[in-house]
Image 1 (tube, rainbow, N blue to C red):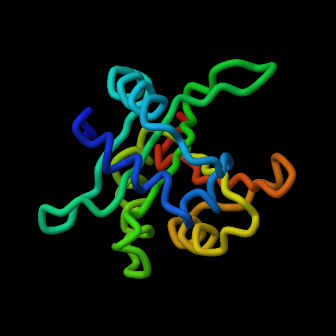
Image 2: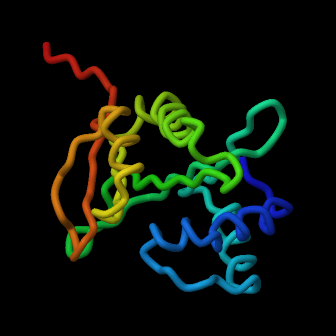
Length: 156
């Protein structure tokens, strides 16, 4: 689990040029806004923020948020995911490893949805390699991918 002390590291990853290019908000996030957000997310029982490590070194993060659908309400069996790879760790296959581990940890309990920019080909490859399927375009230039829950329902 992420800690408040991870805030500066996460902010530097968020404000990295490539991260901003693939983010839905490409503005630089001010430290005070980020610090407020991290305290809120860490204190949440509904949302999860994990730091991915390799050999004791932080290499990325995986986030899972409660999903609310406008006009419908909470989707109790589905969670929205996002992830980031530390800029100095990119191009090593760690994005796929981070998403795959998140699927192992949470795919039994929830269906997982990811929203990415249509132009983000690296994330498209990662999601498809982790059994996410394209749902479609949800906003201009934004695509949603779904990985159904691994729950096995039996009918008697």
